[in-house]
Length: 335
Image (cartoon, rainbow, N blue to C red; front, side, top):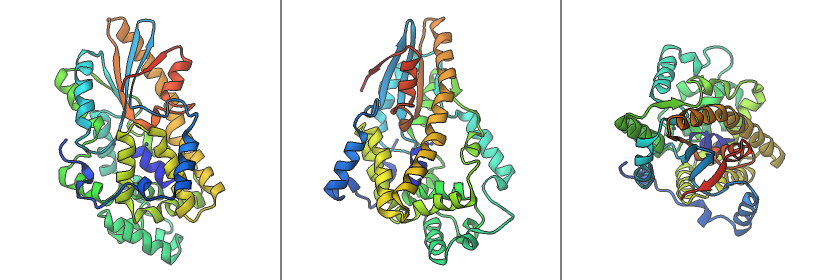
């Protein structure tokens, strides 16, 4: 689940954000049989590779870019390629535009209970002593004192565990995650291209509804072992992203959780299935209507649209590309 939440964030220019991280690519040191199993698990997944695609249906055209939500100098090549396409597009569609991000920030400032649970047992009361000690250290590494982390809602804690300490430090220093999404939004603003959101600003609060107390804690437990080598995790995921090997990111998280989380394979698979449904598949399906509607409206003006969102939303049987294909679009990989 830790990996799943990392993917969700993977699910927001200059030097790479991990430049200050002493991390290494974990694919280079993992046992060969695990690497082979991860590769085998990606076989047959629709559109498993690639970051840039075009979807066409009659005179409707959608350029789709899979993004990584944190800063890296390697984004510049994609920015340069998309700049003229964004300038001539009818609109740029993103998960959340500047207005949605502002509304979310305002809501979190106005109502801290969205992230903090002021009532009920605290996390040190709900977790074992060793688990809480490990969590307190991991949150401290990410700039959150234990006294504050103790009352945070489990979904937010699990999300923080999915971000490496070096990424947190960079965001604190710059005030911006600096990911490809933000770079493309800046290009749209400079070109005067309208920016449209794919989902409401408060979507994140519904993603973890309905979890039992046990499921909430397991979400944290699944992330704790890897939190100690999160910088390695960040380098591994980033390298896989820029290699365009998108679904490998997902399966890496599954096999890492099986090996290191302490949860059974069945429990890991259950959590991964839940996370895929909530964080990706359901949202993918909800995005098809605004994308196809936007493409139809743009075509009436002789234009197309550009869509940029987390790369893990592209592949899979319920990925955006397969769903558009089911709607009659022809899909071509551009990178």
